[in-house]
Length: 155
Image (cartoon, rainbow, N blue to C red; front, side, top):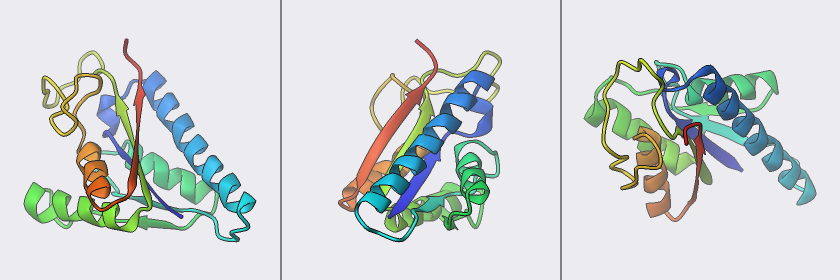
């Protein structure tokens, strides 16, 4: 099974929400390994992500895969623009994943100095901060695949 793991860049996490995100990554992968073994599948899951140059969920998923000797498929953007970099990268993640897990924060940390939005305009919700990972998961759903959101921190 190919497991897409995407979400926010590192700057959107506090130490506590980073810890929570890393715990979620470990649970996602361990549960997939157990399910694979239980079904008689001899193959470990493959981690699919986007190699975000700003760190965060993508890199933590890669580090987990490396630490546990798992195969990974990393789609880095060719450019740092939406149309020629991030969108094609996100489409590849959605295409290569059987399921996409999105790990997002409920609120931005104090002192965050990036762009802010009133809602996640991909999900049309205020329960979590906007993430390109949400776009990727929605694309996966349009391809008939599963997507799961994990919200950490905040009220």
